[in-house]
Image 1 (cartoon, protein in one colour):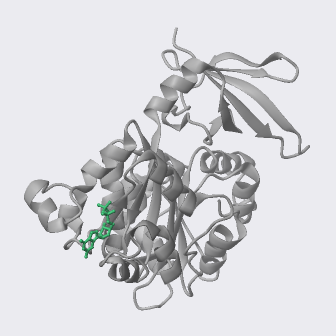
Image 2 (cartoon, rainbow, N blue to C red):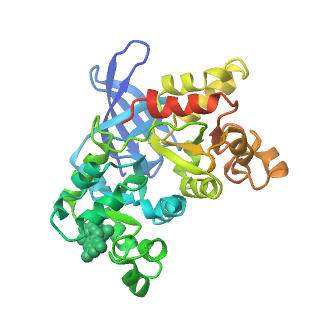
Image 3 (cartoon, rainbow, N blue to C red):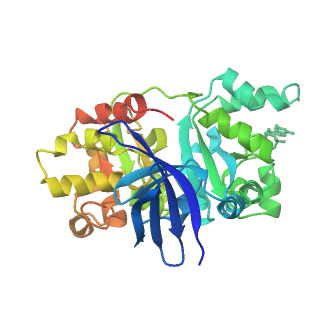
Length: 376
Ligand code: GDP
């Protein structure tokens, strides 16, 4: 019987104690088992747990087992290391400023091609940061133009995970020159969204060493190149974990970009404290069961936070609430069939997206995600 083993950690929020477990996963029967390493005893006997997404089983990932968030820190045996490492190559993908307006469509193409997006953040690079990122091209005739271009607007950096991710993403990108891409690979990203050799929509790492360096450039500990300031009059959208896990985030972003600007974005994995703090205002409105169900869902996997801005600088809170639709997706499908919740919601808890409710909450909630929460 196939069995994967990981070493995982759980920080008990009430006592501050860090627990270490062996986590076993039996993919054929969708069962989990946990052994407390220190006390050498079963913490969880082998039990069916269909909610575990095997795509999230890689080192550094957070998985939720019966409401407990575990960080996978090491492989537990060689079999697991060999099988998982061959399935989880990483690469850096970047949407360049010329294609930022097509971010939703590009994220969707990435998800439809079988990549897992393990990290994502929107940034606006300074000229110096763009020069540092493209240091290998220093001295080449196109360097000035390239670094001017790369610091001219927002970009979206993503760490993609898949078997053979580096090559797979470069294939999806197509040739460097978008005109050549249109001739040779018409369905590629550069063919669809790029203009020429300078303005070619997206970047992809070209080898394992550069992939590691480039992922560290954007996602290394305490490094936030190009961090965007929180803008005025904006509102928060959270693309909820069930939509992200089902590969629907790109479609949500695309629907939003049809009408609004997205001025910041980041993928977060929330712990229970952060989720409960964020939902604090609902505590008085919902019963304890509903409140816990909302916190459970928000911590069940990665959530995509978006800062949504009106194109003319007016407040986006109410217009974005309209695009989100009524809280209950069943109602949304009747009253506002074109809304986000009508399209992506399953029930009142897994209702596709969160949007800020009150005018004054928009910027506060944006700040919570993009300033107060740990950014990496
Ligand atoms: P990539 O790996 O396909 O992105 O290509 P390179 O690493 O060779 O170049 C990095 C980026 O520099 C490209 O994506 C283009 O945006 C730009 N670039 C590369 N070669 C040229 C060129 O000959 N002329 C111009 N204008 N830009 C170039």
